[in-house]
Length: 279
Length: 237
View 1 (tube, rainbow over the protein chains, first blue to last red):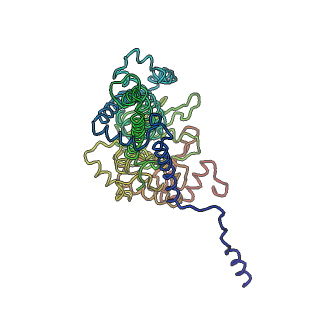
View 2: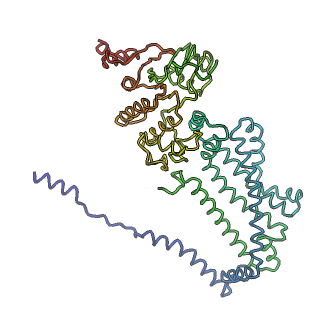
View 3: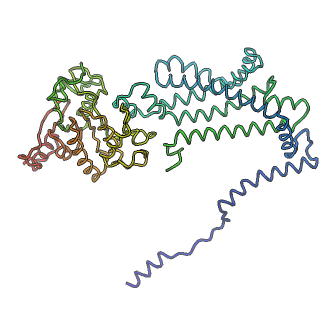
C-alpha cells in the first residue's frame, strides 16, 4: 500500500525544467515591435540633420512634418487631398457598380456567364496599368482618364469575388428558400447575397488597394490638382519634403481604406464566426 | 404530370401512378399513395429505395416523369440538416418566406412551442444540434402547413435528444394537425410516431402496417424488420 503511494508520488512530482531561452512578456514584444521603427525614424532624423544625407535626397522627418503643417494652413494640402479622394470615390463607385452588377448576373445565370465571363477573363489578363498610354489617347490627361483607370482597376476584383461568392452559396439553403416559397428577388436578398457577402467584401478590400494604386499612377501623369500633382510639382523644385509628404499621405489613406473595409466586414458579417464580434 | 392543390377533404395527399427516373434508372415506378388530413404516415425503406425521392416529389423540389401528385397548398419540409441561415437571427429564420405583418409575434409563439421562446434574437451558431432542429420545426409549423414533410429529421441527433424530439413532434402534430410524412430508417421511431407505416421497396410501396392497440409493438417491430429484410427467424417467430 505504502509503496503504491510512493510510486504515485514519484510519478506526479517533477522538477520544473529551466528554459534556456529568455522569456519575454507580450507587452515587451509589443514594445520592441514599435521601438524598431521609432529608432529608424530617429536615425533618419539625425543623419538628415547633421548632413550625412543631402536635403534634396531625403528631407528630415521633422522637415516633412513642418511642411505638412504649412501646406495644411495654406489650404493646398486639403484641396489636393479632396480632389484625389473624390477621384477615387467616383472611380470606385463606377467600377464597383459595374463589377458588382456583372458579378451578380454571371453568378445567377449560366447564359450570362457564357456571354460575359470568358471575355472578362481575357481582358483581366491585361495588367490594367499597361492600358495607360491607350487610356491617355482616349481621354487625354483630364479627370476622365483618372476615373476610368480607377474604375477599371476596381471592377475586376469586385466582379470575380461576387461571382465566386454566389457560386459558393450552399445549394441546400437555396433549396430551402424554394421550399419556404421565396420569390426570385427574396431569394437573392435573403439567401444569395448574404451567403456571398464574405467573398464580396474580400473583393472590396482587394479593389480598394487597386483603386489607390491606379490613382497614384493616373495622378502622376498630367494632373492639375491632387496628391500626385502635388508630388510631381514639387519634383520640379527638388522639394523632396513635399514628395515624401505625398507618399506618406498615400500610405495613410491606404491604411484608412483597409480599416474601412474591415469595419464593413465586422458590421455586415457579425453573424460570421471568423469576422464578427463574438457574443 | 400535374401538381395541384387537393380538392379532397378526406385526403391531404393523393399520389397516383407516380414515376420518377434519373436517366434510365427508374427510382419510383407507378406509385400510389394517399395521406389523410391530419394523418401521420411513416415511410421506411433501405437506402436507395426511393423514399427521399418520393418526399422531394411531394415537396415540389424535383420534376416528375409521370402520374400525378396532389398536395394541399405549399407543404413545409424539415430536412435532415437544420438548414438555418447563419446570417439571420432565430426569429428571422423562423419567418423566412412568411408573409404576415405580425411575423415577429408569430415567430415568438412558434419558438415558444419548441421551448426556445427566449432566444428570438439569438444566432444559429449558438445552438446545439437538437435546438437547431427544433428551430427548423418551428420554421415549418409557423407557415401553418396542411402537409408536413420530415426527411430523416432526427438522424443526426444523439439518442437522448432524438427521444425528446419524438415527444415534441408528436405534441406539435397533435396540436396543429397537419398531414405528415416522415421518412426514416428507424423502425422504433416509426412505431412511436405514425398512424400508418409504409415500407418502400424498389420504387413502390411494398407493405403497410398500422400500429394499434391490439397488435403488440414487438410483433409489429419484428414484422417491419422482416419487411425491410433484416429480421431474424427468431424475431419473426
